[in-house]
Image (tube, rainbow over all chains, first blue to last red; front, side, top):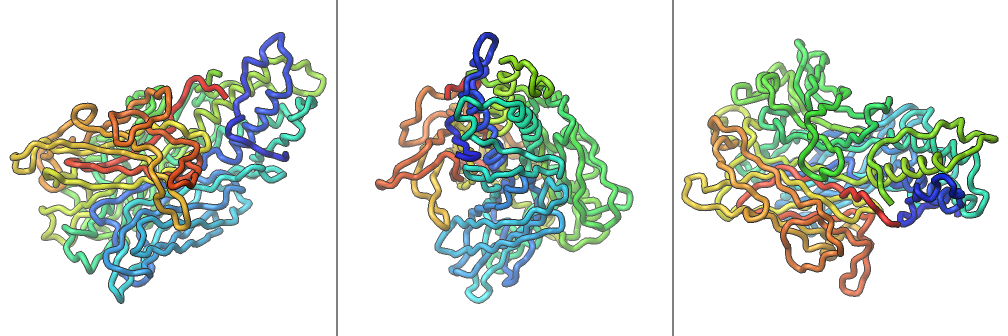
Length: 374
Length: 241
């Protein structure tokens, strides 16, 4: 049976092991199954989700043109296949429009090209990356698109998602690194737990270590990237197409956010819990903006386009009243503060330079945000 | 069994060493911690921001068509305006009921104030299969949110198109989180309830896996514009398995 799991038998009833009852093999057997399920399937839902309307994500170049860039969390070293699904439209008729993704983890990168034929509206693909042995917990994903200039035809992206593919049952033998070299998950053999010699000291230690590590597993709560280099020859007027959001702005207040989960005991966890990854264009005097009650300060050099990482402390006053209110989700969003109104692009401060061109007119602007946490 | 939501304190590992007398409470504690992982922490979720045009009449004379969202509202909503979306969601192997939160913008009248609006949002669950993926059928015909059950109307002043003092232009609406006692059987959208992810679905004599796959959540809007779309696997405090 190896390190198998079955999603229908992952619950071990805690009440079956209370005082005066024997710990029969069914309980450890289900614990082993549940551990394997968490290792293989936990955190394999969307790590990237973004959508577009009004033909903002459109491209007329016959060469791959970089359009967006996101940060996404990793799951573990063995979750090394990223699956991408796109909803799109083609203005015109063509079979040669394409999308391309570049995935970077540490110093390692991988590419995926996906055909966008005008005969379909959904495209998907997957690609693998050899996650380096160094400590890594996030990847950087860049998206490019290419038009057909002969027909001509232009791709219009309407939504994009990505997820790490689950490790199917059985989990391979051996330990699995999750983020740090010292963090090794140990899949559990279910052959042994299927007979009455299941419970050993080693078993218990492995369960405790695995649960502790799995609590560190990250997920995406918000992924937003601007769309740059949007261009259309078929829709030359900006009122028709190609006018995307280039910079995080005052109009994003309150709506640009996600719902991180922070149950009781969250504060006692000492590892990485909630982070905001920000891609910005540096400014000599620095950048400061408010997100979820946190003042985010960025001090990169003027004109430098970089990702920075910021630890986010919970704003306990922002318990969400939306969504599944039976769980403690928080409403983590861009704040509507005086700081943001004065520093983010607004009615009185419209950067006249369009990224990816960088000059003093767009220094201090925010290009992408990812909120990731446990 | 009951599913605890908290990150509980785990047993002292020394209590599980060889030679130690192990009580059931330690095992019970491990089982609870694990159920919290599978049925709380590792529940699925996706959160889509819907990017919309930043074109602005006011700035068309400049070198930029803004690229900036200067107001919270987008505006430009006329009577009978409609749009559709596909949001792909990677369900987990235990996803069953989904809660939905939508941020939307709806006008109470046309921009010239002449027509009444009747905003409506419909959401269904479509099964994807094949390579490349395509929709093969509807797993849940879903729900319909409108002014009678959940959608609010708002003035569209202060929009990206037409600036003035008002800067609050979107609202949130949601499917409720009360899980029905049985799988839905409706063949057209009904009043808000959680969306259902069946284990499998059969179309034209072919059975497809649904739970654990990527599904398309199809959203159609009339008289309103979608701004954000969030889906949660719903927590169930008591699970029998």
